[in-house]
Image (cartoon, rainbow, N blue to C red; front, side):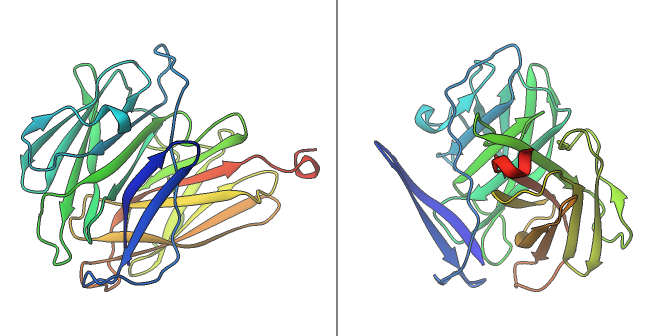
Length: 272
């Protein structure tokens, strides 16, 4: 299944159109998860979120549409195309520690993912690759959200969340993913492991049990692959997120991935 955002109407209400495709690019009915990100807060001394809609996929260098681009440091996001389907998104003013990235293709049956991210002179650069349904590099529109310290979507009515880079795609025992490319919940350690080809579980301690939550997953540094959320579940002390990853033929495939677990506010009974 290949999901793609197609349009946003931001008047009194927000309407988001989502397309879901089979591995061959045909439209199909399918469940999906979605995170809508909008910001009014601007604290240049502690920037936490930036996002872009990459709206000119064939240009060698450009500033994305300001209506759908945001940088909490006050800087201007820019995008460079290095080759077909390969892009660098520059986010001035942002650190790389305790950070995560989410990427999704826009409007086409394609796969866009994070290649890597790191620091450059004045901020963070996120490298993105996009491929068509055959796994071939192709110029594509995409959406990207970058966040540090707090997960994207954090607000007054939520309690943040957690994010990881699952960097070992074959390890069958739990390994610690609470490193610089992660965002922990209350400083608690987080773990991930493989349970089979293309099958993964992310485990974290979350107290109290959360009822309102969402998960977004992005394949990492493996062009042509994609990852989906299977499901997630919580007990009074732990939360488990289950992830499946596939190659462009729809076959289970090992790959690294980033995942964000977004929390809503607990009920009064749960928070006491």
